[in-house]
Length: 231
Length: 140
Image (tube, rainbow over all chains, first blue to last red; front, side):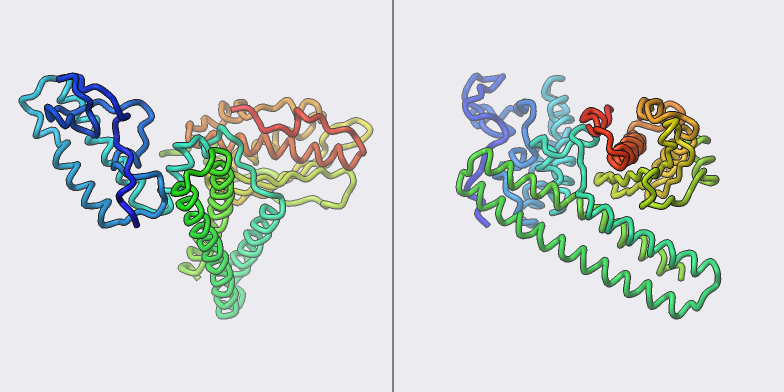
């Protein structure tokens, strides 16, 4: 992937609070002082990355280590309170940012949340009725297997049904993950092509819909795995 | 995070678990889900068309303890109420009764949505106009 297209943490043209020169990134290039971050700075910008979903994990980890070292409060023990606080805040944000971007799935969730597309509880996340029906039925069949076990029915047969259910759910999960991969690629291409806000929103709406479906299927996978562990 | 005593009580002794005949014209069915956590909830009510009183309510929920408790409580509350009274139940009433923590508020929203979905299904079956405001998502 290309790491050349970068967006820096501070807005271009922001003046350094200390020397008044134009500061870019976490530190002023002229005087080296740590800089405050503008509100709403994204975790991508924090790492000077474009808002793309394919990230080289090794480059990200290296950047994380480099920044942790640079922003570490130990380096600011003799600085004034303002800088000490900045270092503390920034170190904790760095950990949040790294955690959110490190995992490809939480990365998508973070992007959507940052863009206001996935607010817990606020924007109603409703799944299509057919999906709910299907998920409900799958849960019910799992329930029947559970009851059959409680009633002491043939364990071997039960195990076989659970295993086939597990395979079915795993396949569904793999299907959803493939869709997610596809839409990730589309997103990155759209960013690369400087797509319009409305085009970007369409891609995000699809990502959101896929993530919603995924959470139901993931729950099914977890439930069936639990049943199998007990069977 | 610990569950409140009331949540645990409903979770251990859920009221009105089961299902009603979906094809019965007097039965309204609401199936809703919360993608944030993957919970699914089905709530059914049998309404007397003459008195508009909810005579029976059943639920089945696949989800966490708070979602089960919220739907169990919802079935308890709607029984004996009229359709209009049941529609007035707010998710915040459930939050208060069950002492749900902020991260579990969506479970109560799910229960309110399920009541509204079931009753709008009943109204549709009865050939009544469904008020758009009723199908709108619940307040938070």
